[in-house]
Image 1 (cartoon, rainbow, N blue to C red):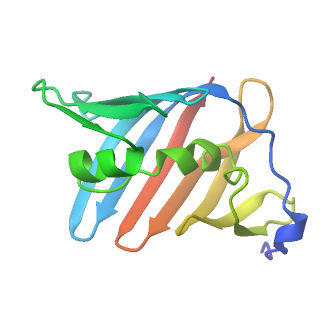
Image 2 (image 1 turned 180 degrees about the horizontal axis):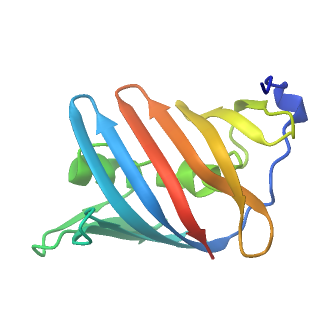
Length: 170
């Protein structure tokens, strides 16, 4: 059995400023549930996130940067907002913390923002708390460059639970 180590022993992988990942997510917000596959392209401050139903039908396309974000649905409806939390709360019914998630999905905390955490025996993060979210890492896998990255994780915020499985890192 792994015993948690204190946060000072955490070893974080170097974060990348650009990546592309594919995977699956399930979200629960109070009594509502949602499942989708996703394809996420992150480059600097620009993010593009495509969500598709389990049958492969596009559910939403989200894109944006520091100047603003937008969500487009298959019926052509477009929602815009100044930030990801506002946009996803309005458009999806639950907040997707893209700003933090771009770091957490790499197994690291958001830079220059307070956090707490617990390390596993190998020093890799097992638990991270930041921005009101609790991120639990269940499994890691090597990316194309051989760096260990999260493969399965759960994010919890009051009333919201997100489960992510990352199938491919590029």
